[in-house]
Image (cartoon, rainbow, N blue to C red; front, side, top):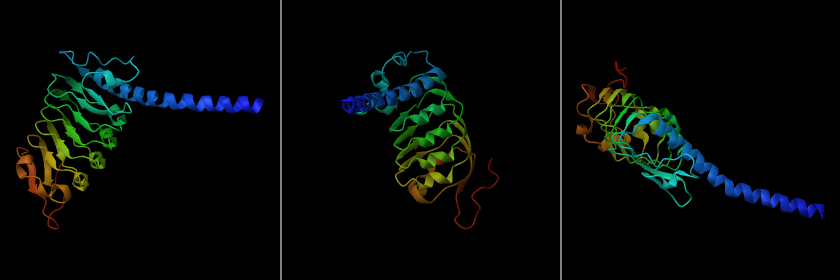
Length: 217
């Protein structure tokens, strides 16, 4: 009889854990997004619905989830937001679209964004973002759109980006990038005007004739 009670206890424990796990995951994603909210100034109150006390963030405005209640989209373009990005965004492992264009966001691009293995579109254009483009973005093997134009980015274009076979659109124009423009892999068909107005860029990389890093810092 004791053995039967034990088996019932084990079965109920496993069932409870299976029910709680999606909630825990959703809460961790909600925590990550709420960290972003805390780092941003939101005069138009577009983030007013981002309540950390809810079971998951799937009911928040500007957030889209899949059928498993995992966050797949964050759409906050042209929302008059200022502040900075947070490394917690790297915890959104099912995120496919991160749309934060046409705001007043400052600071650097978190290295942790390189953990977003499902990301298809990273749109941070028309902000005041500075610092370097993290080489960790080369880990985004599903990325198709990378638009970082019209910011204050400096340093070289990471060569790791050229290894993303899915990458179709890259725009880093109107920054302060330096060094050669990659010409291999996914960069082979990116038009040169997507690199314009970076006074310190040195033109396309000369394969076998020029070192990649040439006085670029």
